[in-house]
Image 1 (cartoon, rainbow, N blue to C red):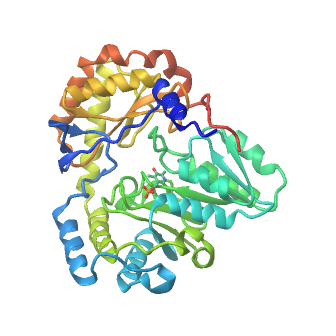
Image 2: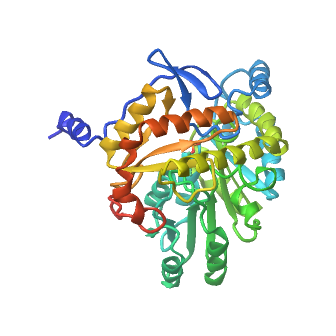
Length: 406
Ligand SMILES: *Cc1c(COP(=O)(O)O)cnc(C)c1O
């Protein structure tokens, strides 16, 4: 029987119902929600490029040149010279042979993993990987194995088990926690066992490394160590879309076979034009990254003084663990009453019992705005104490995870 109402009621009664909120009048980190002005502390627009005037102009000029829609998939008639220009500029920036564009990061991960991991192959994934990497593993013809978060002993052991081929797939910066994957150790293990590696650096690109080249640049790893680098354009780039960068042959195979690249309309060419301008800013504007580092330091110092339990993150993702979903919703609502928008993140996005306020900082924030955030957190401190019950064991080690093993 299709008892849809009962399923919806279950979601509501377990505090897992999602609600879409329409934010209006958004400019940079400010917006309006239900008539109230709010400061946004939960966007992924880390460099403040989403409404940058230059990027916006490039988008408008692109629309005038190319219209709005591409009209077809890349392999039919949707591909334009500006798509090639963007792919070339991304490859040049990341010092990789070649780049293949995807419409979204979700589709890039699904396409790459399901194309490469064939029958007899195994993809090894960190338990806290983004849903798109996990879903790619579920879709693949080979098997998916999940290792405890950042547990290199477990990964090493798993790589010793027989398989036709091994792929290790990991977030570069964990999207809900803000910590970095041990990419150097993963690279070493992969080399020892003849495995390939995919790093999805959705939250590191633009933010970390020289010219914002991400966690791999920061760790001194190149294409020979990690053949597959997935990046998304909707975060630090402030636009939309995604790509995979790597060796010629690998990218060629993905272009030939990745279904989420082939069977979908090519992104609007004007977006590619906007992203080209955004890439210039990403590469050149070290001041945005420096300002972000200053804001992160200010936030962590202030939160520490308030006795708030921070997670071990050096990135703009600075979550405060609350624990139960209902408590996280209450804390989020209390912040909203004080003009601060931080959406509560609940299972299944994060493991059960680790609901949180995923605070994110942006180069578009000012120091005084971070101070306002801290003052609001101080105000609602009693609502954040729940974190004490759960935080200790759940931060860097494995968590109780309700997501079933496939
Ligand atoms: C946001 C995100 C994605 C999805 O990217 P979209 O372009 O938004 O679909 C993929 N991987 C990670 C780690 C992400 O955080």
